[in-house]
Amino acid sequence: MKNFIEKLRTEDWVTVWVAIPLLILAATVPAQIPKVPSTLVGEVAWYGILQLFAVVFVILYAGMWLLRRPIKGLFLSLVFIFALSLLAQMVATINVVKYYGFESVFFSVLFGLIVRNAWHVPDWMKPAIQGEFFIKIGVVCLGATIMINDVMKSGIFGLFQACLVVAVVWFFAYWFSRRSGVDRESAMIMSSGMSICGVSAAITAARATGGNSPKLPYIVSLILITVVPMIYLMPWLANTVLPLLFDDPQTVAEVTGAWIGGTIDTTSGVAASSMISGEVANSHAMIIKGTQNVLIGFVAFFIALYLSTRGEGNKTQAPSLGIVWEKFPKFIIGFVGASLVFSLLLNSGHFTVNASGKLIEPGVAKMFSTLFFSLAFVCIGLDTRLKEIVSRENRNLLKSFLVGQTFNVIFTLIISCLLFGLLKPLWN
Image (cartoon, rainbow, N blue to C red; front, top):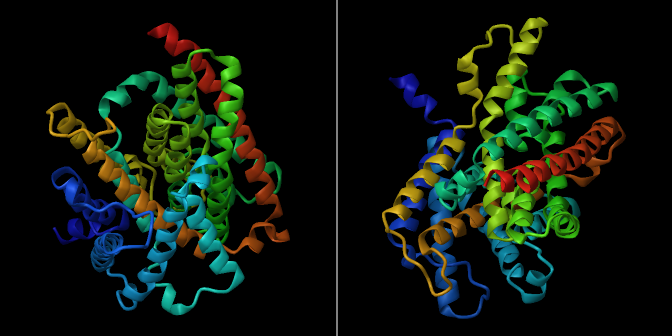
């Protein structure tokens, strides 16, 4: 029993436990939850800011306590990170910024990078730099915005694309990186991160290889740095290319979502990028990305199987279905569970509609998701040294990543057009 409880205290599970109260608040008292203010003027704005900070602090404190991580210094560190995150979200609400499609995550990374690379990160600022922890909470909350009825619209096409893209991109990236002189472990980690779901997949692949590659921090930084321009590049490419291929706006939106969901490496990046292209694109993108995330455990299994047949990797752990479960990112269960529960609530008529015709309860869950994504991207910026991205030591890995990502963009475009642009309309 004790061992079972300990397994539920891993970061993947803890992020689910601490996200549940947020979803309960969103579903039961949405009108009482403040929004991120667009100004610092007035008592109402500051009252809302203090409420949101209190929510984040309680969630972070509870999570660190459950994970048995140091709690000392959390408050002061979180004040700074929360302030940068709040500033990023407020800048994103400026009309001219919204006009050009810049999301809060862009400014979150930017402000973090400025602090990290122009100055330095002092020790007092480090306790609350918990990027992965914040990302996973954001993903669980994001699940509450994905309704099952929307998922069913993609059906077999979304599943087929996710499986095909993950398989083809993974093997191409691995093959090219090995041809370019990248070591086997780093090639597997990079290929997994690129083809599946970014940081979580890279870390999972590192575990599957039997240890932590010294290249893992660099690969993680490379994935996250590349996500930022792609968040804005992909909607622009979709808006430029796809209307030339398809006349129906609905088809263009679905192909856009499938393309973005299959190419951008992180779930939060997919969410931010697809939002620029509209709700239909956002829905399809998150479905594709969610399906890809599910495949992470199976990729880890095949990595372990491959290494064991060659006498490499973790020799004490024979490949089995147990490895699939062990390596599977448990917070994805929270994502799916949130989607199921909120879909049931929607079908039972529990949700209310605001003056703009949007559902209030999922909207609050989305606000929580954006808030924690923004915190995560501030942490990512604070953890990233730009000069390491282009260092001579990592040049082959950088080249392999860029070539693999370019292949990913082109191949996924072709598959998205075939499945959602041609076959799906015929199927309907």
